[in-house]
Image (tube, rainbow, N blue to C red):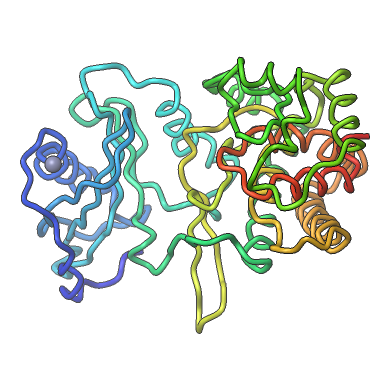
Length: 378
Ligand SMILES: [Zn+2]
């Protein structure tokens, strides 16, 4: 529930904009949401009316979505409450929504009914046409309640919390797959798979979309040695192991442990909250990249990007094992019948594919050695 309106938060600067999206938000979407009681608690009967809508702020946009921040002020039986919102719209509203938007729309409108809403922002609307025939997703603005991104690499406490949140999501999916397969199938069958990235790519550049680069890394795994960013060179013996793995496994192979993954589980999509200076919660955002694959893809992505700054390989391995245990424990908490050993083996064997997804690789050598120590190239 929103806080009663202190009228002090409106200091955010937003230009008065009358672009079609801002016009739609102020004149159509929010008034209709108020009228449709979207801001009311379920079952409430109080009198509700729109007080005002702040000027809309344009946030980053990618080529596809227009993202706006706005605060709606709504009167409940005369008491005004403010609702800080993030609104996602199609940049070109005349075109049909494409895969990534549909993924996220499905996540908030359907999947949260089974997955729950704990680890994600509250969603007020996730709809493809009820409001003036526009596809729109309206979420709570978590930054207004103190959530924030971490700019630097995640430390151990942050990473532990992320691992638990991730394992909860994966565990719920695996349980749903086992217990209510028709529902689960409907989700994954509708996912838009953006690119054929499930290939083994251990070249240093992080070029998962480039088949040429992938081929060159297959032809020449020693290229890993050439990375200037690599703290530790990858010795011939490790190169040989990587090459051997690539000769037996070039594409991620389907198995029973595949589930719906976030697809871009990195710190840019994680918002943290602190209470009394202590880390207290994490929420996962941007579900447009969801994909059906090995849970290792999410696990490995966030793990490898946040390895400790330490060239002491046994310590890096201990760190990875600790995170894997936290992850597996939390999956088991959610889905007690999970075949833990099989999941562990699958995650370890599949980690090189997660490595292949990482865009900006620094410390390539440490990552590859960590994978090696975990047994990913065996
Ligand atoms: Zn505008």
